[in-house]
Length: 197
Image (cartoon, rainbow, N blue to C red):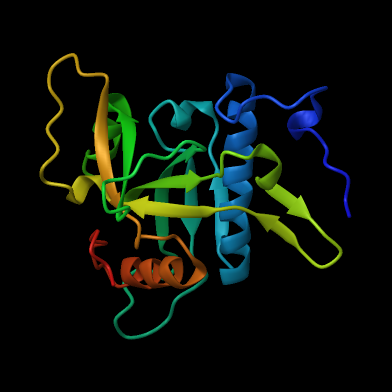
């Protein structure tokens, strides 16, 4: 049985939502997504602060696509990457109710040649469960959801409003299967809608 090591190498364990873990959460989310991309043969490009200030955290470039319907052989998807260890859900637990800064919302609804999606990584409240290593596997919990903010027609931030609540369907999990399908869609010039099946 592996001995539990305090997250971040700190001398003690802090509450899951303590600010000291913010950078660690971001790194864990990037590596979660990097693992999915690696499996698909896709490239994950983490952007520097200049683009990060515009809300663009990472870009996924899919492996080369070929076929008569392909209009972009190297499709890419831009992502604003968020992480939470204290998720809030609707009464039926079918929607993640995520508080997105209005600045990020405004950045994501501008016209773009590539899809600009919101990705929210959900971590458990129990910090030692965020990452576990055993003799047989490396596990990063728990799940990542995606959402196309520009396709949400019922969102209208008010003047001076700081955050807006985004309702993300729990079925919108970012997995190897769903990401591969989205990359295929982008390669053919198709839009990514939030009711993607």
